[in-house]
Image 1: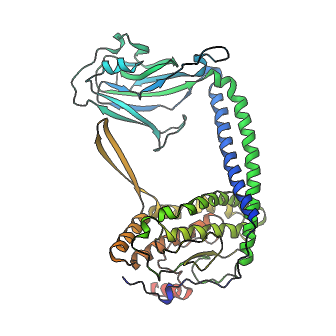
Image 2: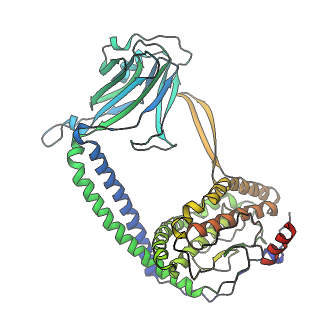
Image 3: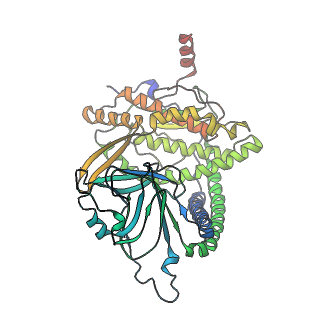
Length: 504
């Protein structure tokens, strides 16, 4: 498909004064501020976690996971192997091993009238005991697809079947003499185990060694050392984190103020020409090369680092601006133009790389509008609603989040594969926009031309995303239109009027 330039392909930009150079000090303040703010948040999180963990340890209590159900069609459920090496953990001034950590495992059979067995034994002896016996091995414990601290209410236990076709039946587990600690009986069974050197395995079975095994259980941990020492440590980390966070936010806001003030001075008066006061424009007159898109992810890495830093800055400036809007009804102008500049930078990088794949011209390292073939602008509002600032970014924007999520959120694709250690699983996340850009890349590779129809669709998705960003970041009060405006340019008011007239 031809990509010859037409009048509608050329980006519409309002004339503006030359962008005054930013003082390097503002960038230095911004960078140091982000580093200190992130460090402060991390210290606050660690300090709060330490205090919470200490609180769990009071009165001899264990910090435990919530109950999780585990099933096996075999004769046993075997926990992941764990190695403990306590060499050098004895002597004057060294805490007792029992002070370091003690674990508690609880399990209740979900099968009627079925007694349950729990035991911890040396790996070699347990493996010999279960040789050729169908059982399940726990490979991972996760929450929502990611590892989490105890306390979550949706833990998932990932178990892999071993010897599913085996026919061996194990002897009654309670009769074995290799268990370091064990418990067997009806109802909820519990074992407590202090750390000890060696290779260990946790085993849960029916007390009579029958199959299947279906239990509900939890794991807890406590540390007398933590109960004594985590309080002062957590308090120190919390205070240090708060100081670092406060200083970092102050420097960050100073840097954003200086950079945004320069942008405000160089921005032309608004020219309203579309359905929304946030305008995303692009120039599709030049087709990208066939091959460069293969390495653009590598070439854009410097921009990704800068955008990560700027993204943290926008988070804090938006929070500070929200407080200002709540009391004054105005968005501080310097922070407004700084946030718009960050969105503009992000759009240029997306236009170059994997949000549109529409140009080979490398994006400039600047927050200001330039002659780059992609631009984003938002009209500055003189007044904003004080009440909307409390609800628009989360409650009112939910319909848009759902729609944008359909376009840009990943759809999980999972598959299994055979491996020597058992069955494995792999997964990938694919979005509509990602697939669309992939099709654009394939067409570009084969034909050397940019497919205009798919490019217009991709730009429409990006335009919707940036309108929602404008609303969610408190930059405007106007609700984004629930409409996919495709094409390189925003639809003009005359086009919208004609469209409304045809629809009626």
